[in-house]
Amino acid sequence: MSSLRVDRLAALYTMDPAREGLGALFGVSLVFEQGRLVYLGDPDGGPAADETLDGRGLIGMPGLVDPHTHTIFAGSRAEEFRQRLAGVPYTAILEAGGGILSTVRATRAASVDELLALAQARLARLAEAGVSTVEVKSGYGLDVQAEVRILEVAGRLGGGMRVIPTFLGAHAIPAEHRGDRRAYVRQVIDEQLPRCAPLAEAIDVYCDRGAFTLDEAMEILTAGQAAGLRVKAHAEQVAYTGIAAAAAGLGAISVDHLERIDEAGVAAVAAAGTVAVLLPMAQLYLRDSAPPVGLLREAGVPMALGTDWNPGSSPACDPWAVATLSTLIQGLTVEEAALGLTRHAGRALGRPELGWLGPGSAADLALFAPPPGALPEIASLIQHFGGHRAVARVIGGRRVDVVAPAAD
Image (cartoon, rainbow, N blue to C red):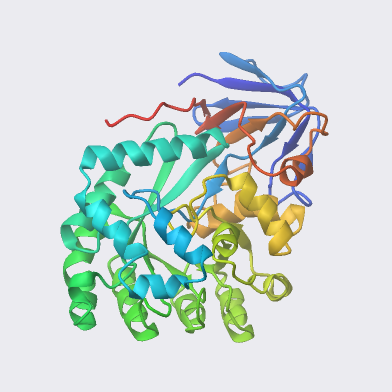
């Protein structure tokens, strides 16, 4: 494996928990060898390398981490967008057989090559924004074969991206089981889970009005945990259910959305060390209220940010736009937003080595030019709404270019 030196960065935000704030350093160089960060310091020091990148004028930070996406799907939900603009609630669309269920129909009908090409194109857009690691959920299959197929597609994704697969068979009750919810819950546990657990790192469930009840969700999550999967949950989004506290009681790595979490739920999440994954793009598209960021902050809950990229409630793939929205409509500070894209997002995936740079971290780096006329600082990237593209990315100590979408 070749070595790489990045020289004389204008600013490097290490996000190192051992350093103050965002771990900002100025005018430094880094050297990567054998998949590790081996030098970080004075630009006149450190070893030479096989390849050198000129970092002058650039902003460096750990490779971004997107901890919540639904990127493997087919079909369009543009008509649903029109309905929501006309005032039809998201849950009403779902309960009428639209929403998630319309995407399930399209995804089941798509070929493996089509799903792979679509997902690879979506990941290429994340890669251009500086993302090095992305979580990819199943959940648009909702039967054994389709859920397995989606996770197998996730396992084939690449193009310069670290992909973390999550099993979300409990995304909605499929149309064919609307008359017998219990039969579908048993299918998820008895049939889907044994086939899907070897293909995933975590299990997730959508516990909400119109989706799964608290009892159903906990039964599914407990079974997934017993199968060796980390626990996550779509929690307290449309209606309060109690799933955030209950999942935290299982040691969940993250609970996501949280627009309607209460004080007791926040306390339980804090006590468990669970990460809150905030999804401001979904809040915007659904015209929803913000999670209680002040309560989460006061309790010391780490807050990560995800795109929630999906075809209905968050058809958006720009983590930088998400970061800016988190400050404007959810009340995060610039520093909290930056950590939400990096170190806290790594923790939300159960990968604490991701999203920071220092001894023991992953060797991931993203380099950005500041917006025209702006200072080379992270606040400039978050102030200017979206569209930032990485000048270069390093994953596992190796420079990785964005790979053009391909079916195979």
